[in-house]
Image (tube, rainbow over all chains, first blue to last red; front, side):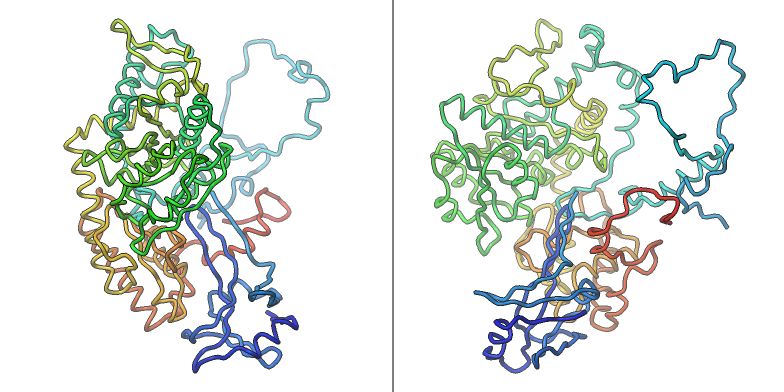
Length: 96
Length: 489
């Protein structure tokens, strides 16, 4: 997996004030019921056990095993406009 | 050893057959001469050629891949996966029911019409409605039928109401049905107790509101205590209250949607009334209405006149037909059998036991999983896997691990307002031993998450197929058999 940051995302991430133990995170967001949908959030939170840490543009980004499983073969782009956006081809909706 | 996991096309051998017909003693005709040339196949149909025994083993192997309530515990929240009594099947197979034809004259099908009429009456009592149609062939079609009734009712009153309100915990079919019926959907947020936020509701109800769709108990398994005020708010604005009967298993003979102020009700016979969950059909989603809405019910309607049961279609205001003939008759026979077998007292016991089972299981699991709504629940409850998420294991992993222990997982990631949600509905038909065994397993999985998360993250381990790549399945589905690229399942 490759993580790319847009210029605006790098600028915004460098200005983030993180408390001890916190890092930016790419996180799979599941929505279920009769079907299953997945998209990705970009947030800042504490470490989870067995997180993977990726380094890009000098910035550390964490991801759990579950999220990594979905993004393993993809290039993920983080953009920032008024909020952080995770751009990936690996989101989907399925339903019955 | 042959395990019969191959597709039937893969075990096909040219010339093999499962039938041995005698020589024909009538003159053969050439079928290709009976059809226009442009409709004839240019190549032979590539059908499998197998023996009768191979065929039996193939379909037996397929049936063994199914998991149903007859196999084991199936705590799928809001789906009410209760046992389907076999007496329902016996009655549905009686010649008098299974051998009749919908084109028969009414006077030769009086028994069937009587059954349908009495089922309408029984469901009307259970729902607290004044009349019921049995035509809709599923819960979602029941929703659409109910909303079309609401639409015609408002139009008949000279109003073109455009909005249907649904709470954020609503079943996904609610906004979908509203959209198909031509309405705009407006979502009403829940309050911190998981109930409809009445103050937010008041902000959204206006003269454009056609209806509010609600389940009660809601999908969190919580009873909407403010239902009387909710009904008043909607009715004062001229709107109608629609009851999604998905969770009716919690209220049988305890209360009715009619008493709560609902105007339209659909009931899922495959949930509350023990007809099979058909995996797409056949099903039934009868719709009940209050007396003001009776003229808008679908036709034909079944009525009793001078000691006979008749079908009537002369309702000027009716929304028309919503299903061929009179609904899925065989399913309706099963639901009728269940209701008559249980009686009112039996149905009350159903709801009381369903609620007791849910609360027992909830209490046992609260020690290991976050319970975002710790109050007493009704027939189902929702836990959160938030604690396990911090340990690097997600709710989907827990669901997959349950497969290793022979359980169907609960509904997951729903409702959407619960982080890493696990929605559990044990139903009344399970024993205490089953509830305890399931609770023990969930507690064991919670311990595994702490001590050996790999075993959960990589689950399932004991199924024919391990963890499926959902992304690939959704983006690159293989839905057509290809001899060149056979798929072994």
